[in-house]
Image (cartoon, rainbow, N blue to C red):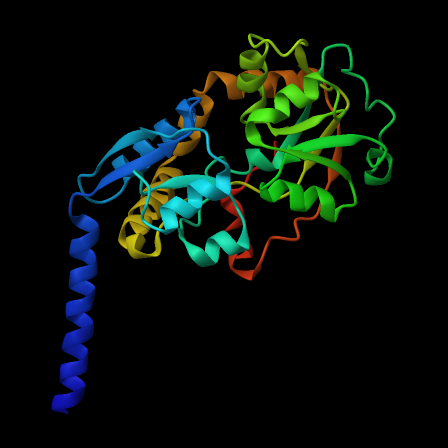
Length: 288
């Protein structure tokens, strides 16, 4: 009896400690690439406001690194940041404390295709994955998306993050799939660069697969990962998250463009999606 009571008290004490850890004030350091993404910063702030406890954060501007290097620095405790966001990959989920909430509600897996101006109807004849195989698509060398595109048998031309837009301008590939949450800002920004060509959105095709960015922390930061998970879910349930999405101008601009130019949907399977990720409730995902 005493032994059983002792075990019960230990379990109760562990629960009290966990609760106190979540409630205490935590300070987060969020990694951001050189170019700003105000949506991510605003979402992070919203999540901390919706979580229990009085938390704060700072944005750490990082030099443009290859994604895997930036994540490796986080895993090895060599980084100036303790939170990074990146696309889902099962290896990343195993290595890090991943917050199981899709932070664009699936927008990242809805891919419009950036093209050079004048090529906005280049995919007019594409009606299937087989048709799309005749075209070259650009993608990052270490992006999870590349594995998804290659798994579908598509012709993928790989490059570093910094080189992909110049490669499109030089016609090294025909189209550059970008999430609907990012394409407007990127095209407007890249029009100001000296790439030798203006960029536009192809008018006929959208690629769709279940995919998104997630927040990643080191394994030792599981309490902080739980704080973010709690905050994101609370913001979703209260309606604050959707209200925030509706206020992002570039999202509304791309939704309007998609309504004006309805596209053929080409669905791709995501071979990276494993059992644990499939357990993320469908209500957290949206069709656009």
